Structures are given as C-alpha cells and as structure tokens.
Image 1: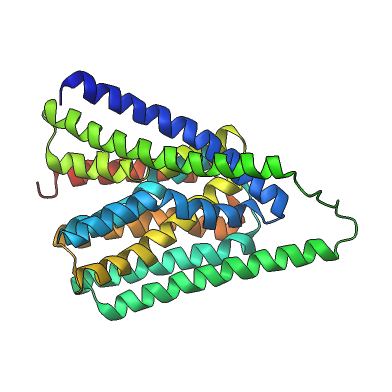
Image 2: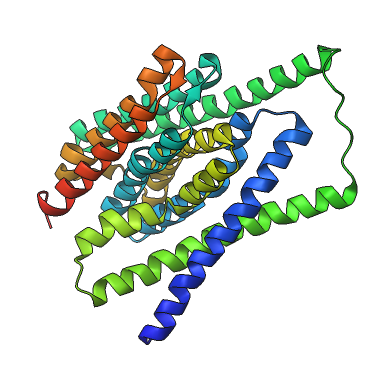
Length: 324
C-alpha cells in the first residue's frame, strides 16, 4: 500500500469519527430527552456499550490469537487513557457540582473492578475466580442502571408539575435511530482506520512497536470515548460524557477481561511490567478522578490538570523506562 492511500485512509478515519461523534451524541441526547432517562444513565449504558466495541474486539481477537499480554494491556491501557486523557479533558472544560448519589454507585463499581485487577496483578494472572468476581460487578452495574432508570421514570410519573413529554413522530424516531447507528458505525470504523494507518505511518517514520502499542493502540481504541467527550463538551452535555467514560471503564474491566479469559480458555497471565506500571497507573488516575468528587460533590478543573500530568508521566515512563 503506497503512502498516498495510507494518508487518505488516515484522514478518512478522522472525518468518520468526527461526524460520527456528532451524530452519536445528538441521537443519545435525544434518546435521554424523549425517554426521560437521565443522560448519566444513557451515557453509562447505551453510549458506553457502543463506544467500548473497539476495545472489546481488539482484546478478544488478541486473546483468540494467544496474545494475552495485548488483550490485558489494551483493556487496562484503555481505562487509563479514558480517565487520564479523556475524562481529564471533560473535567478541565466542564467542572461543576454533581449529585453524589447519581455517581457513587458507578464510581464504586469502577474502582472495585480496578482494585480486583490490581490484586490479580500481584498474583500474576486473572484467574477464573477473579473473572467470576468481575462478571458479578458487571451484573451489578447493569441492575443498578435499570433500577436507577425505573426510579427516575416512576418519580417523573408521580410529579404532577412535571411537563408531559409528547410522543415523538415516527419520522423523528427513525431519523434519530439512523443517526445513532450511523454515528456508532462511523466512530468504530473511523477509529479502526485511524489506528491501523496511524500505526503504519509511525513505522514508516521509525517509531518502535512498544511506543505504538502504548500510544496509538491504547489511545486509538479509546477514540470513540474521546470523540464522544469532545462532542459532548462542545454541546454542553457533561453528564453524557462522564457517564460514558465511567460505563466504558466498568465494561473494559468487568466484561472484556472475563470474556478474554473465557475465549482463551485459561487464566490470563499478567506481565511484570503491567503489574508494576499499568495496573497501578489505572488505579491512581481512577482515585484522582473519583475520590475528591465523591467527597466534595463536584468535579474540579484541578483534577483534569492532575490527570493529564499523571497520564503524560505514565506514557513517558512506559515508553522510555519500562521494557522495549
């Protein structure tokens, strides 16, 4: 494949994820509005399931091929990128007060899943019991979202002062469902084109495989979350953005990791470099993003700055000081 084709596909990927992100956030916001379900829940479920597809596909394909280090590294690395880079952008541009009880269950589940993975790192593998525990966290996450949605809809139905939502026209429903599907497909396909051709370009200019893996692949599979976050920032949809990131991280840790263990048919070994750097970095950025917010009931701009600094330090240390 010549350079012109690689560059064309690279920029086509950028166009697809930008336009796909625009469609996706618009349609997701519409779903939240017409259904009455809070944007936080929509972001943590429907949106995060769609934007997590690249991580899930990459990790499961790696596990099928016996590349267990890549499957674990991609899942954990994507969580670190989601929080340290993508959530940092959201917090920097959209700090503000939150309702603690809306975020606490999801934050606790994400941190619990991260802690399980860190403990697994000390043991040197994600064992079958650990995989079962992670799947339990995933099931709790799904039930928590269902119960939150039911509680919100019940409260709205009992509130006589709340304005009644008019039933959307069939054409409006069709248009927004098409926008949602096309947006999701555009983001995933665009991310795939960007990662694949970005990796080829990096090799052409002499960047090592290690650096490509830590930067282009880890950030590349998180591009759907990044695009969704940037679009949500532009459209002032902070709850949709943070909900998407929390939900995507819970799925990365509690669903993708156990699925990889099932696909590989055995416990997933964790490399020493991952146990020493990747897993602690994941837990650290999660702590910076979540704990202060749960104490003060607000996300602050300083958290965004701190997350970016920690993530940059992690990338530098991983690229230049930990293994090739």
